[in-house]
Length: 206
Ligand code: 5GP
Image 1 (cartoon, rainbow, N blue to C red):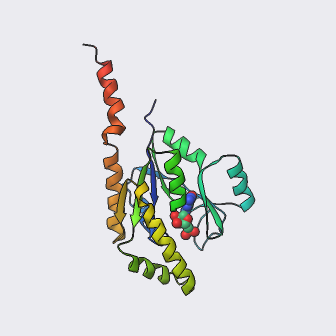
Image 2: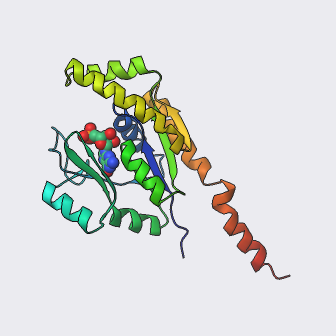
Image 3: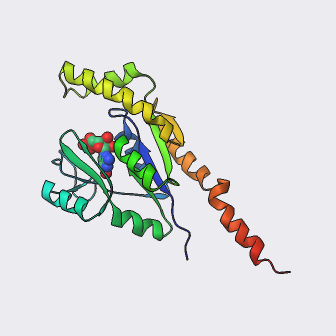
């Protein structure tokens, strides 16, 4: 039987640039993990492709999947559902491949409960002023909403204690590189490989 793959959970506060860093990771050929396409009830943005960026589904279809335990995790974020389809994750891990999730912090906390031996990577802003500047830069929020988002961001950053690694997003390419290095190193962690060495000892007969 193939060794099961690693579940990589990449998360961090809203506005930190998770999507941009994730795209940078997957746009370069030297990554060795599969991206899990999330399901969402939000409408596609210009240029987004169904099945590539997200599985765009109705609220009813999403709620049906929750009811049938077909989501590894899910969260409601800005009036829409977002979630990780369980089937794809299980199938891909069973094939011995690593699976990469890019999700918000509530979903990451759910996975920490269900899959504690996943690899949890937190993307952090260089500082809160920069995070605020990025949220303002999106140009979509009124001042009171921006203030609310900053309060949420502070709480989200406090959730860093659930994670194994924190990567600062000071520069997209650097952040992407750090994530790839963490994933490579994680495969050599003793508690992930010790069963293999124990078997090696047990099977040695002479
Ligand atoms: P957006 O609408 O900008 O694409 O994503 C909004 C937020 O939802 C981002 O923080 C993104 O990381 C998060 N997100 C995307 N897919 C999932 C998912 O499957 N589960 C959870 N919990 N969050 C997700």
